[in-house]
Length: 111
Image 1 (tube, rainbow, N blue to C red):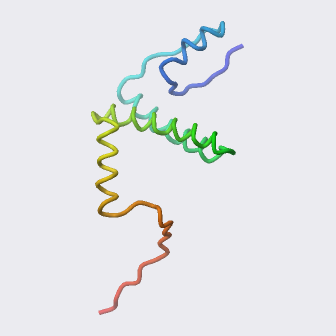
Image 2 (cartoon, one colour; image 1 turned 90 degrees about the horizontal axis):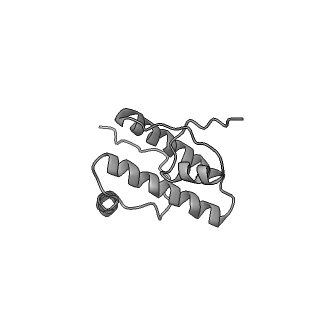
Image 3 (cartoon, rainbow, N blue to C red; image 1 turned 90 degrees about the vertical axis):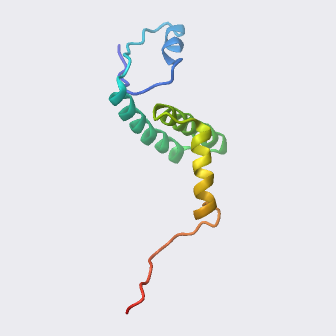
């Protein structure tokens, strides 16, 4: 019996599958396939954060998202530290999300 996954997995997953007595069938993605798989994985990881039911599960899923961001940054030639610096820079000018502000609309002055 075969289980189909057709998704990007972490580097050690094939070894873990082998250790469990099963045979992983996989291939190495080219650049375009890899970027598209990272984007698809980001959607998958977001859904897992949404579905998490405990603080521990949320923390685990946020860790997965962070690892994904690291991979996306590295693919684009950045480090995780570069991404954090960019986030900090934007936070200094635009702020963070701590105030939980939800913008409804903006009224424009009539001239």
